[in-house]
Image (cartoon, rainbow, N blue to C red; front, top):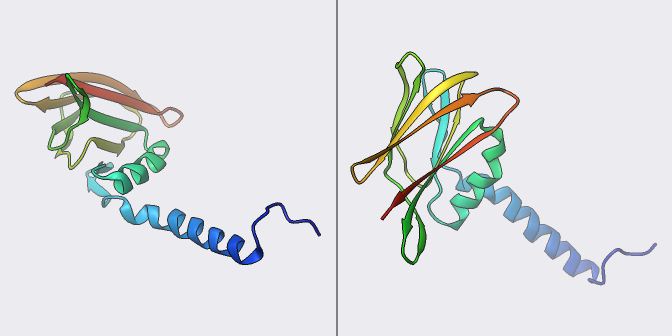
Length: 143
């Protein structure tokens, strides 16, 4: 039987174990899932492990919010951003402060208003959430 790799069996086993441990470790880097009413969300993304873990699960959440500051030397991820998601009747269904540059949320289908604030500047987005789509909104503030 031919092997698909030039690695010796022992090295192949080590490579497999290392890749399996990395793949299994990624969920440990996810920040805790939180709940507010009908909304399930998580926020974070500080550090490579947590950022990678969040990016790996983004597709599972209908809404991804990303917070960035535009500086002369390049963009910088932001955290501690107050965020409010309201239904179109003005009722707040999620109020939180981010713990990193990402906020992932599962919301019931509908149209929502998202407001985020950084250094006294408010950004606003209206989003349509459906079970068959993924919305990714970037909030970019000058620094």
